[in-house]
Image 1 (tube, rainbow, N blue to C red):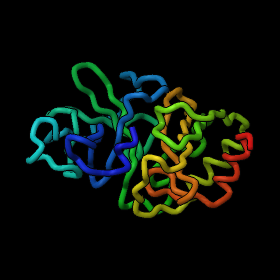
Image 2: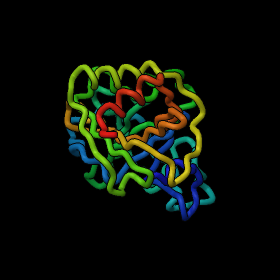
Image 3: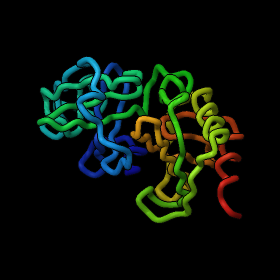
Image 4: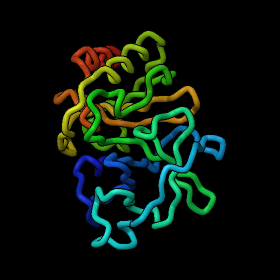
Length: 215
């Protein structure tokens, strides 16, 4: 899952992405929230024009309207209730796949990257020094005041160029449970203070998370 941290489109590190209008979106196969349905789809946003899986040389990572695995011709839709800079949905053979932004060079604050203000009901947190699939210490943050404070710190945070992170670096894997039943999963690296995508919340963010873990 964390192969996304070393952004190289080759056979060893390819992850499931699409790129449109300079924004890179990623899809986790293990996303625990509910799947999107037809009623979640907004207007058509674009069409995949090339796929790395079909033509690795002619479709390098980052090319506009490119994808890792979605084939050329895949229809891309907005997701109702969310900014297109945050979420897009790919429709292929009657299946709907949710892609969520992880990198946007135009983003100046966390709000520009993650359209989650006022939309989060709980946050699951896993503390680990390995990949998110590994077993770690877990906690659920469900108190409305704490959830609101953490989300507020994210949407008001500054955004910088995303940094690389080592496989053994301490991280908190955050799963944001949205009020519509879908989720957003992103790792937070406390040593650098960065949420994946280059979002850097104030130091209070780390303190609020660590309050929910035993010493």
